[in-house]
Image 1 (cartoon, rainbow, N blue to C red):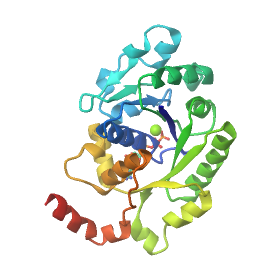
Image 2 (image 1 turned 30 degrees about the horizontal axis):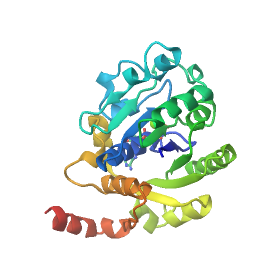
Image 3 (image 1 turned 90 degrees about the vertical axis):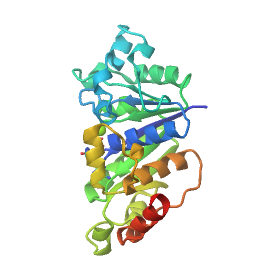
Length: 265
Ligand SMILES: Nc1ncnc2c1ncn2[C@@H]1O[C@H](COP(=O)(O)OP(=O)(O)OP(=O)(O)O)[C@@H](O)[C@H]1O
Ligand SMILES: [Mg+2]
């Protein structure tokens, strides 16, 4: 049975594409066959984060119009052969696609892949409707900011109405030092507001930005990073493993560097 998961948030810029790229790569490294579908038509980014932008020939739109076969549009990752990308068109709008086309496309992909992970655009309009049309599970990404949390709450309601059953929360860009002095919502605060099960907490980490610019998901980095480990842990939890949540406050106080030295030192 394939898993069909949409990464969504409501609010823009909270880390959906970063999460999709890293979790996709992490799942492929765990031996899964993974296809990442960029559903951000008109503003695609996933190809860049994966470093695959130069190899995009066709996109989902050409598949829909019959200009190419689905296999021709898929871009295989050179680092992990289990990972492929279905790019979105850059020069078309979100109206170039409809929910029925997305459902058919995803149904075709589930014949081959263990995981179909769909990167949703910001907002709750047509692009969102297309991205969630075929989804059976959702990863809700939010940052610990009130606007992002409120938008996430709205999206959870829409997904439930759509019949999406397994909805999990990823809290991204947490800054433990700010939480400690009450300048930022804590994991618990966000969890209480949204009341959906937590599957990961990703700290603010400047290496995310470096990895984005290099087109190399952080889970591939040789030196481990807090965010990279957090993404790996999310992939393992999706796979059903019980993985303890990292103690980010302790990590911030130097424990992480000690463990890192001990493990990799
Ligand atoms: N944990 C993190 N630490 C530091 N920077 C991060 C983190 N997560 C994401 N970012 C940065 O935040 C920015 C937005 O991330 P991303 O593009 O993944 O968001 P998005 O939700 O997909 O945005 P959009 O709604 O525009 O599609 C990027 O510059 C990314 O590098
Ligand atoms: Mg995005």
